[in-house]
Length: 273
Ligand code: 13P
Ligand code: ZN
Image 1 (cartoon, rainbow, N blue to C red):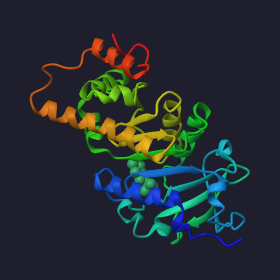
Image 2 (image 1 turned 180 degrees about the vertical axis):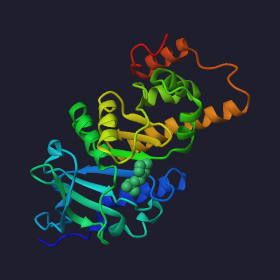
Image 3 (image 1 turned 90 degrees about the vertical axis):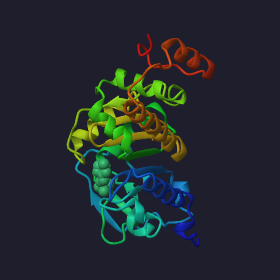
Image 4 (image 1 turned 90 degrees about the horizontal axis):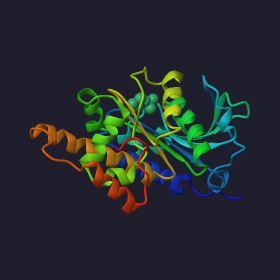
């Protein structure tokens, strides 16, 4: 059957729009940031012959939890600024091989490129999140500026960091009631940082990488973008508050608790006094 042009695919359009938005927000300078988006075979087949693999790209970690799964991902060293202009150079559609040790490239990465160097963190996170929510599809990493800055000035304690964010904007507790996970500083692109991130993703949808950036996971692009956007907005407000001389009054725990009840969310246990 004749295939529809891949640039018509909704998931390609979403990747183009999202990377453009993220670039404009200043969170993805140069090649900073990466996105992986889990696709079903039914979504891919109208556009691609899935028996036609362009090349096989080995992985240095165990992807056996994702055998046969399809993803569209950003390429390593690719600039978000350029994705919409040249999608087939900057994005790739992949399928995890039967042994979980490689990915087959089905489309994209035209100039011989490879998937994001953060594939371990992305794939390990997908494995973690799918166990909790079978509908999880997106993992997004970027260098959200104010969150990144806060990792230098705020204590890197998950409870304290989460509480500060919750207090900066009323919406925060509603958007991420489970809080924000924090891993230690680790070398990016390694299996070690992948494992640490995925472990936190068993409990959180937002994981902070100190002095580097943030990871978000969720069912769709809006959910994950919205999660990161909301946490980043809180971090921006924190920055202004500090610059204006610090907190004089805040949302107290009783108010946070009332908020949670009104919106039907459960704040992480032990985070409210
Ligand atoms: P990639 O260009 O390999 O995706 O890396 C960017 C990045 O943000 C590393 O953490
Ligand atoms: Zn990064």
